[in-house]
Image 1 (cartoon, rainbow, N blue to C red):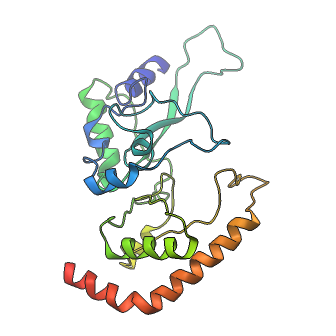
Image 2 (image 1 turned 180 degrees about the vertical axis):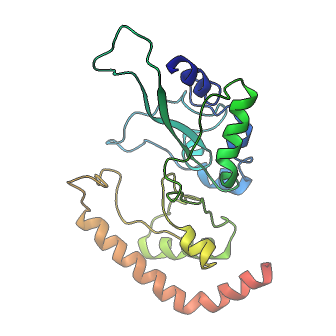
Image 3 (image 1 turned 90 degrees about the vertical axis):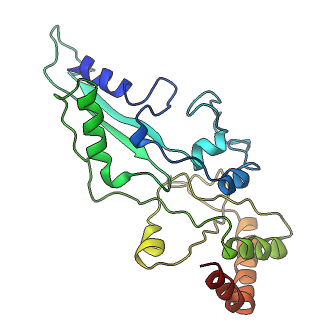
Amino acid sequence: PGTVLASAIASMVDARGSILVDALRPPPIPEGVRAALADIRVGADPTAPTIDSDWGEPGLTPAERVFAWNTLAVLAFKTGDPDGPLNAVPPHAKATLQLRFVVGTDWQNLIRNVRAHLDAHGFPMIEVRPARAAEVFQATRLPVEDPWVEWALQSIEASSGKKPALLPNLGGSLPNDAFSEILGLPTLWVPHSYPACRQHGPDEHMLASGTREGLAIMAGLFWDLGQDGPDILRRREARA
């Protein structure tokens, strides 16, 4: 079972992390997204981990792989007792895989598409089921050409005196679909931190300098929103 399951996984993602199942891959990267990521340098901070330039989809930059492409990762794999193996073939094997996906991915039919792939490649004996059906963060992305994006970039630069970095979407998980899909709102995220903030760790923190800058940025955004908001709404309606 362990050999069969390992072979099935290898038919879905190769040794360098490139997804082999067309149904699990995203559509081509939009030109606007590609242009926005051209100036993004992943792992450039001194405290950042070393980036493996050969990992992931061939032909993409590290930023495109993180923010504009799907990844299929093996989170857990078990067969037998790794800490106390017996001199016998284990009767069972199980693995947990995670697909991190961007806008345009057919995530609603994920289980069905994986099932079809396994059946077509000679693995009908492998059971496929969602690990946590309720914990799906739908991918969202406000088009980079949206008037709100241009407005926010100009406001932040005016308040901070620095050119802001534009990420079309995050590479992690956020319940942003509650705003963009359920409420139908255009969404912009403006983080105020730095790469070594130890996010989610026991020593998570933020710097006073970043806090001061964040306050200035948000004060400027809300001030500019009061001045420019009605005009931006009219521009968006004209584009619709």
